[in-house]
Length: 133
Image: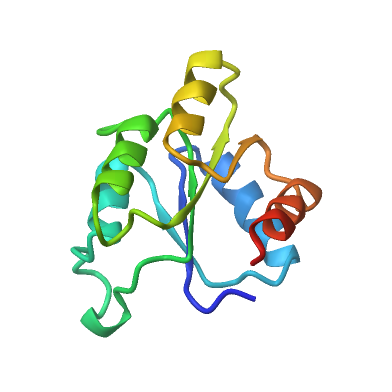
Protein backbone atom coordinates (compact mmCIF):
# COMPACT_ATOMS: atom_id res chain seq x y z
CA UNK A 1 0.00 0.00 0.00
CA UNK A 2 2.70 2.51 1.01
CA UNK A 3 6.07 2.51 -0.75
CA UNK A 4 7.53 5.21 1.47
CA UNK A 5 7.41 5.27 5.25
CA UNK A 6 4.88 7.07 7.38
CA UNK A 7 6.24 9.62 9.84
CA UNK A 8 4.51 9.60 13.21
CA UNK A 9 5.27 12.69 15.31
CA UNK A 10 4.23 11.99 18.89
CA UNK A 11 5.82 12.93 22.22
CA UNK A 12 3.66 10.76 24.47
CA UNK A 13 4.99 7.19 24.68
CA UNK A 14 1.55 5.68 25.38
CA UNK A 15 -0.03 7.41 22.38
CA UNK A 16 2.97 6.40 20.25
CA UNK A 17 2.55 2.77 21.30
CA UNK A 18 -1.18 2.79 20.49
CA UNK A 19 -0.67 4.45 17.09
CA UNK A 20 2.13 2.05 16.12
CA UNK A 21 0.03 -0.93 17.20
CA UNK A 22 -2.90 0.31 15.08
CA UNK A 23 -0.68 0.87 12.05
CA UNK A 24 0.87 -2.58 12.46
CA UNK A 25 -2.61 -4.15 12.57
CA UNK A 26 -3.20 -2.49 9.21
CA UNK A 27 0.01 -3.95 7.78
CA UNK A 28 1.84 -0.61 7.88
CA UNK A 29 5.19 -1.52 9.39
CA UNK A 30 7.44 1.11 7.81
CA UNK A 31 6.88 3.90 10.32
CA UNK A 32 9.47 6.41 11.45
CA UNK A 33 8.87 8.17 14.77
CA UNK A 34 9.85 11.69 15.78
CA UNK A 35 9.25 12.75 19.36
CA UNK A 36 9.29 16.52 18.94
CA UNK A 37 8.75 19.11 16.25
CA UNK A 38 12.42 19.81 15.56
CA UNK A 39 13.18 16.12 15.08
CA UNK A 40 10.24 15.88 12.66
CA UNK A 41 11.51 18.81 10.60
CA UNK A 42 15.03 17.30 10.49
CA UNK A 43 13.60 14.06 9.12
CA UNK A 44 11.32 15.83 6.64
CA UNK A 45 14.12 18.04 5.34
CA UNK A 46 16.39 15.04 4.89
CA UNK A 47 18.75 16.16 7.66
CA UNK A 48 18.29 13.15 9.93
CA UNK A 49 21.88 11.96 10.18
CA UNK A 50 20.85 8.77 11.98
CA UNK A 51 19.40 7.54 8.67
CA UNK A 52 21.47 6.50 5.68
CA UNK A 53 21.51 9.18 2.98
CA UNK A 54 19.92 6.90 0.40
CA UNK A 55 16.89 6.28 2.62
CA UNK A 56 16.09 9.91 3.40
CA UNK A 57 13.04 10.04 1.15
CA UNK A 58 10.07 12.18 2.02
CA UNK A 59 7.57 10.11 4.01
CA UNK A 60 4.37 9.20 2.21
CA UNK A 61 2.24 10.55 5.04
CA UNK A 62 2.69 12.55 8.21
CA UNK A 63 0.70 11.68 11.35
CA UNK A 64 1.19 14.79 13.43
CA UNK A 65 0.36 15.57 17.04
CA UNK A 66 -0.33 19.26 17.67
CA UNK A 67 1.02 19.57 21.21
CA UNK A 68 4.75 18.91 20.82
CA UNK A 69 7.88 20.06 22.62
CA UNK A 70 10.52 22.26 20.95
CA UNK A 71 8.28 23.16 17.99
CA UNK A 72 4.52 22.73 18.11
CA UNK A 73 2.54 20.77 15.55
CA UNK A 74 0.93 23.79 13.91
CA UNK A 75 4.36 25.28 13.29
CA UNK A 76 5.59 21.95 11.90
CA UNK A 77 2.56 21.90 9.59
CA UNK A 78 3.24 25.45 8.39
CA UNK A 79 6.87 24.54 7.68
CA UNK A 80 5.79 21.40 5.80
CA UNK A 81 3.50 23.46 3.56
CA UNK A 82 6.18 26.12 2.93
CA UNK A 83 8.87 23.61 1.93
CA UNK A 84 8.97 22.57 -1.73
CA UNK A 85 10.18 19.08 -0.73
CA UNK A 86 7.19 18.39 1.56
CA UNK A 87 4.47 20.77 0.35
CA UNK A 88 2.26 18.08 -1.20
CA UNK A 89 2.72 15.47 1.52
CA UNK A 90 -0.47 14.06 2.98
CA UNK A 91 -0.86 15.14 6.61
CA UNK A 92 -3.23 13.74 9.22
CA UNK A 93 -3.50 15.46 12.55
CA UNK A 94 -3.59 13.00 15.44
CA UNK A 95 -4.52 14.87 18.58
CA UNK A 96 -6.61 15.13 21.70
CA UNK A 97 -7.26 18.82 20.96
CA UNK A 98 -10.84 19.86 20.38
CA UNK A 99 -9.93 23.50 19.85
CA UNK A 100 -11.94 24.87 16.89
CA UNK A 101 -9.06 27.22 16.07
CA UNK A 102 -6.72 24.22 15.65
CA UNK A 103 -9.20 22.58 13.28
CA UNK A 104 -9.61 25.79 11.30
CA UNK A 105 -5.86 26.35 10.90
CA UNK A 106 -5.30 22.71 9.96
CA UNK A 107 -8.07 22.89 7.39
CA UNK A 108 -6.59 26.06 5.89
CA UNK A 109 -3.23 24.28 5.64
CA UNK A 110 -4.76 21.37 3.75
CA UNK A 111 -4.69 18.48 6.18
CA UNK A 112 -6.25 15.27 5.00
CA UNK A 113 -7.91 14.49 8.34
CA UNK A 114 -8.18 15.61 11.94
CA UNK A 115 -8.15 12.36 13.96
CA UNK A 116 -8.81 12.08 17.67
CA UNK A 117 -6.49 9.99 19.82
CA UNK A 118 -6.17 7.10 20.16
CA UNK A 119 -5.79 6.21 16.48
CA UNK A 120 -8.16 3.43 15.43
CA UNK A 121 -8.08 1.07 12.48
CA UNK A 122 -11.57 2.20 11.46
CA UNK A 123 -10.70 5.92 11.45
CA UNK A 124 -7.38 5.51 9.66
CA UNK A 125 -8.82 3.07 7.10
CA UNK A 126 -11.45 5.66 6.27
CA UNK A 127 -8.72 8.29 5.76
CA UNK A 128 -6.77 5.95 3.48
CA UNK A 129 -9.86 5.25 1.37
CA UNK A 130 -10.57 8.97 1.16
CA UNK A 131 -7.00 9.73 0.06
CA UNK A 132 -6.86 6.96 -2.51
CA UNK A 133 -3.79 5.41 -0.84
